[in-house]
Length: 415
Image 1 (tube, rainbow, N blue to C red):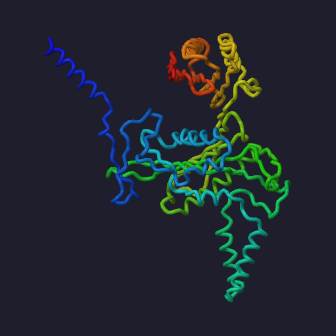
Image 2 (cartoon, rainbow, N blue to C red):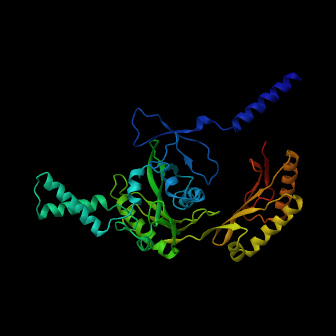
Image 3 (spheres, rainbow, N blue to C red):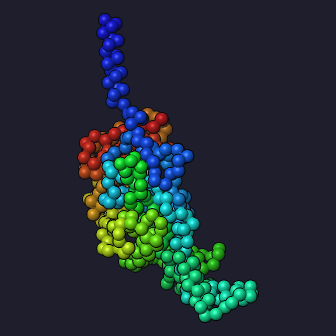
């Protein structure tokens, strides 16, 4: 009997071992620009899903790491900009074929230069004159040819800013007529493995974060002013900037023939409860030096409850409202459900709800989570992803989540 049990346990162990992830299956690859004394790069053999890119390890931070935080004012926009660009890249770079890497080609210093304002004609001439005066001080020759060389040099070196030029000592009208459209430029890289087990850069995605509202001061410490930017004007400016960026990238070593996907992201106003969204994208072949047609992107993040939600998506608003009313009957100290809907082509793809309640014990957490689980099954259709967060003032208490097409949600209660 003991021998039979031992055989059974040995067989079960072998079965479980064969089914468990084997870290030795991870691929060891070499990037084309790695030196001989660098550690080998690893590509994990497993990915979270077919929709998720494998990433090369050890993780290499972006060449412009952290810059996005200082350039975009809303944390929600930062997250959506990064995740959304990767999501849209899947149309051009299949996660089953390509590896993902944070952008390595556009440094923070380079991007900061591109994000500056351009120079006015007067500012260019002032800089030319300053360089001429310096040559005279140094007792160097100055003639028409040298002046022309200086002017070309100033234009080449000093007019890299993609935002509109502002004259010296601008007033309120100058700011309003020349808003700072561009907040940030985000680069993502996509690599492919060769037969000799090396990986090389074979594609890029470039996202441009553009303002929907320009906030400015006319003097340090003075009041803030706001200028709305229409989507039409934002698109016009963004497309022109993308073309300029493409021309500059094509002059960079190793990027002359890289396919590039460009996407334009419209930021929400600072302090918004929902992020902005991508509004246009286009792909450029490796041999192209100009951008052709752009595809409109119809995405939207909607806050529940809100007048916008009621106006655009009345039926969904009613479902969320009915759910809120049912929750209110369970808890007398209930403060309200806050929701966010993500729509593509006016179809709800994901609904996230947060229920902030003051709890007085783990029993209440369990009881309420069971109640909310039942409501979720009964009230929400299964054609979209659903996430319900039950929170207290201290932490996330429980989570109910469900992927589209799944009947029964999954529940996790945190301890």
